[in-house]
Image (cartoon, rainbow, N blue to C red; front, side, top):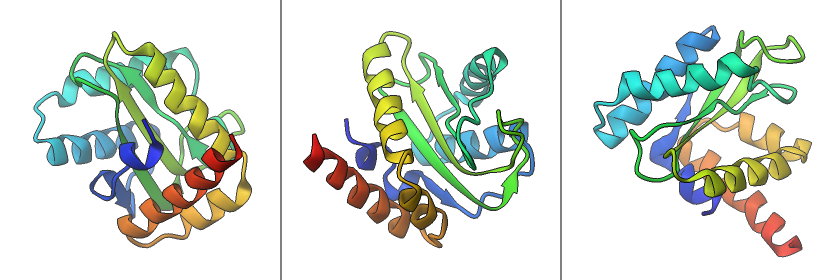
Length: 157
């Protein structure tokens, strides 16, 4: 699965309003549930919080990858949140996060979940990707940036 398939424009929320980690989980999950017409809000939140309790997923300067496994989804799903003001996320570096890549996977799909996280990590090594993505003002633009950088990454493989 490609990141541009996971983070389609309808699953990209530009202008995240949340100010802290718990609020941003709720905002991203609410967006996901609205788009998917899912009633699994609490189950998804529980999965994210359980994973986060192990260690912060604020892993890179300005970036968090909240993720969890739940049978509330049938396949790997995601939502990208872009914050202008930053989210107090309890990140490992103590700094606010601006890009939040939420990844949800069914309990049985560990391999695909790990491949998605690996691909994200590879893209996030490029500071230009972060800068261009964070500057986007609409979901379609953010989606184009993901596809552009992912295509470059695939060409190098």
